[in-house]
Amino acid sequence: MEGGSGPGKNEVAVKLGSSDHLLGLMTTRRDELAAAWIEVVSQTLAGRISRAELDQELHELYAALVEALRAGGLDASGEHYTEVRALLAELSRNRARQGFRPAETAVSLFALKRGLERLLDDGSADDVAAYLALSRLTDELGMFTVDSFAASREQIISSQAEELLELSTPVVKLWDGVIGVPLVGTLDSARTQVVMEKLLQELVDTGSAHAIIDITGVPAVDTEVAQHLLKTVVAARLMGAECIVSGIRPQIAQTIVALGIEFGDIVTKATLADALRHALRRSAQRAALSVGDAA
Amino acid sequence: MTVAEPDVGEVRVQTIATSDDVVRARQLARNLAVECRLSLVDQTKLVTAASELARNTLVYGGGGSLSGALVQDARRRGVRLTFTDQGPGIPDVDLALSDGWSSGSGMGLGLSGARRLADDFDLRTTVGAGTTVTVIKWTH
Image 1 (tube, rainbow over the protein chains, first blue to last red):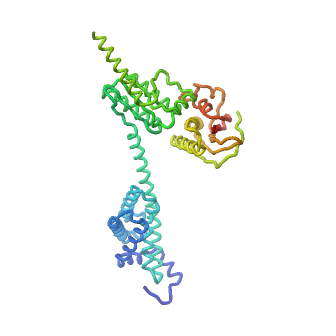
Image 2: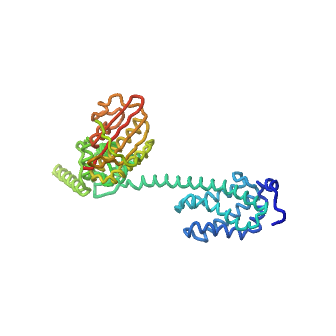
Image 3: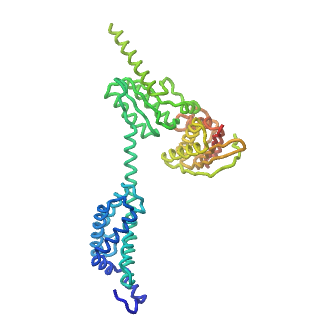
């Protein structure tokens, strides 16, 4: 780097926005810069990602950055940066999945500036221009990284919500002719719809005459939940099945009474065991009746 | 039906704009109930009342907010929940508070049920300006 009289203000101003020197540095001192970058990143991630994985990820990104810089200058939203943005999106997705924070993800990019700092010791005008150019680039790409991180996380959350909806509404066979639906969590309209569909389908598939809906895992039964339960029971009845609601804990029973909800002639039980006993007794009665008819 | 003026702790606010917010309002009520060390039955009653009132705020009030706080008077501790909306208001409060009547598709037990579930219940409404419902559950 040139020493001498030092740069004047104008000289710096002219070089702002030029990426030539940055590109030069990134090409000629590639190994040094990349190594410094990776070191800073691996320190901040504190060994939660393997060094080999990080090496590969960042080297790929480095190569793409140099290429984009050569072809497209500092226009980070331009077409020459497509490859860089794709790699960053991939990186953000991985980080989001592995449970890293947004800041820990963005640092992968900003650390490049720290890496460059180590190479700039004499502070010539060229170096300042290079640093500012990189700063501009990382700012823009950093924002992009944070955006893709947030988008990935949104995606993860919404797919988890869907999985949860599926997961939390299994229909199980308890006995010959008796199926059970253990409900856990909040019972809203969407859940009720899923539960009702699965329950009715299972009644047909197994030819069951009894269904037990267990609400031990439902934290609060308000009028909406009660209404959903009643609808499900009525639908099952229309198909000729008998529904029992079990898992009514003492606090839930008192709350239902205070609310003024009437379950009418629907059979309710405190525990799943009671409900199963009731269902078995009823099927035994039914069997006895049909034997009686035949005789 | 007036609610006394007790000492009020830190007020927590939850916006009620979507059905997910009803769940959050319920969680806020549950957290306060646990902090207040209400009995399990009273916790469940308060949470259920919060659920009814939050849904009313959303469905009939067009959205609004819940502010909740721990309160204390000379003898006991409690949880106070205030639901506010800027909706159409309630033209006939007595009718709205009667069992089985609903202007919507519910069971018509939410508002009257919430009154029975809470210890103190206060409803202020102005047609065209909105509704504020305040409930308190005290430790016994």
